[in-house]
Amino acid sequence: MLSVAATMRAAFAEVTEHRDHPAPAPAGGRVVLSRLGAGESVIAAPSPSIKFVLQGEERYRIDGRTVVANPGQFLLLDRGGPCVAQVRQSGRTLGLCLYMPALDTGAPLAGEGAARSFVMPTAGSPLAAFLGRVARRLAADPACGPVIADRVLARAGLELTRLRDELDARAGELPAVRTSTRRDLLERLERARAHLHDNPGRSVTQAELARVAAMSQFHLARLFRAAFGEAPAAYHRRLRLTAAADHIRADRLSVAAAAERAGYSDASSFSHAFRRLFGHAPSAA
Image (cartoon, rainbow, N blue to C red; front, side, top):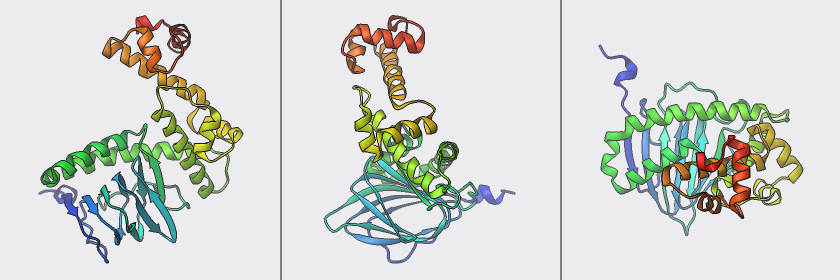
């Protein structure tokens, strides 16, 4: 006899019209490709869900709070009461929504006692990279949705668990008493970290990064190190040099070409930084 969990199958739907009442939530979860124009929909949230934006702007009213998700971002939403998704009059969106199986009993996505939504940038996120591939595949061929829905939710569930653990660990390192304050600070720091991932070919000043995070340079330096274990400049240097090492190995780039791609002014300074990080010359990568 099959177990209850084994008999629960994920559903797939392509949604092109807004709803004024929540759709029934299948116990096995649901994958939704949404192509929506202006209007608003009422969405149930009986289990955690992920909203990934491929095109356009999506606004959500969640527990009296307005949350905006744009391309390059995705929204984590914990279980709770229904919320409202809104597309502005001049807008049109293409997005992917994953409603996790009802048996999901993981910790709150945004932290115990905090608002139950968390906006994440896609840059540097394995979960977002996976969601992007799925969203583009479904947008090109919605007919494959029912076939891949179970696999998509299973893989997303694993990545979501890892992300929950990472967010919880990072938030726990921030020097704030209130959970809601730690959540807000971590959202800003994740934006700053994503900005570094978005700019692997040049140096990013601390002043520029502070503007992205909407905090002072002093607080950015202190909180970034607390959350991610190293200063922003060191994090970005490691990111750029690791990418350069990959290009040297995989693409057989010359040291000079790799230095230029990583945003270094000359091969000598690149080689010096490379040796300090990896303990050997770029030519030995």
